[in-house]
Amino acid sequence: MTNTIDIETIEVHAAGEAGRVITNLAHLIKGDTMEERFEYCRNELDGLRRLVLREPRGYPGLCAVFIVPAVNADSDFGIIVLEQGGFTPMSGSNTICSVTAMLETGRVTMHEPTTTVKIDTAVGTITTTAHCSNGKVTGVTIQNVPAFVVHKDYPLDVPEYGIIPTDIIFGGQFFAQTNVANFGLEIDPNKGRELTRAGALLKIACNEQIQVQHPLNPNIKNVNLIVLHTGDPTPGKASRNTMVMTQGPVSRDDPSTWSGVLDRSPCGTGTCARLAGLHARGLLEIGQEFIHESIIGSQFIGRVLGETTIGEYQAILPEITGQGWVTGVATWKLDSTDPFPQGYTLTDIWAPQ
Image (cartoon, rainbow, N blue to C red; front, side, top):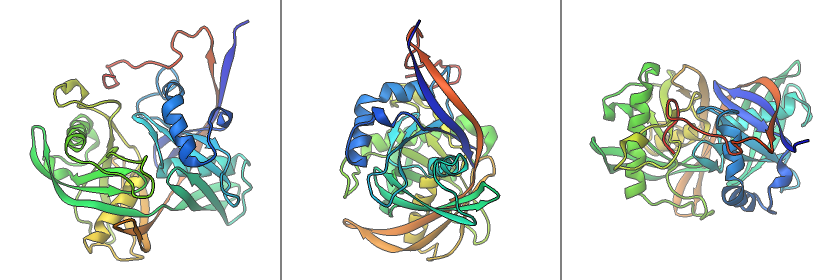
């Protein structure tokens, strides 16, 4: 009889972005703090990340979350986020997926009409409020970690495009954000390849020309994600965006790497970064509602709750609200005779690895 590894998951999507909430593998993750656990995952469990997210169990648009025990006495649990490009310290859509999954399956006790859920992450503890009715989570409001602008209109020299003014902002991870019109494009679901190509080229420029590091957590560094948006918002109307996540290393000399995956949601941490950028420009007041719309038309609502400082940076206290839906419960298996213990990719739909 062969040996198997079972991976128990709750399948959820947040505003269209699929999240696989993994509930039974915390025992594999070592470390007393969330920062130590995050580094352990990056150094020791990347093969498991590939297994979960790649074929034949995953697909390019899938993210996942490890649920781990809380490190703080008043927190409910911790999360470590798995994305196609690696482990990431925080994700808004995956937080919504996690809260929805843990409450609707009874792993955290639900109270109606609202349940406060505190979550430990590699960038700090976040507080969420789940709006609940008849045993269902109808919305999750996240008070995220402080967001701050590192560079405003930084003149990145992007391959094939030249100088693109770009904001470098921390919203839970580091983002490069710019107006999609700078690439001569629109946020159009029929232009996915063009948008991912532009995002990958901007990522290349970031890798070559930008160095960033979180002042309180030096292990969080480098620009990870790209947000292409529609420019200055109109109050009361949705501002569209798409987030580009590259699937592997990108190279100026290898055009086959100029690709990625578009976030199906408005991107939670990207929304927080957008709030910080707009507030720094005087375009978004404290308490003012910001409607952020994804490439498929789903929405998160963002607000700036207040101001603070993080190291040398002026920062904001961001809040976002969105909804998640449970789509299934699964037990994924890895048989010891499986020839693909870390999954696989194929360049018909995946970027070259």
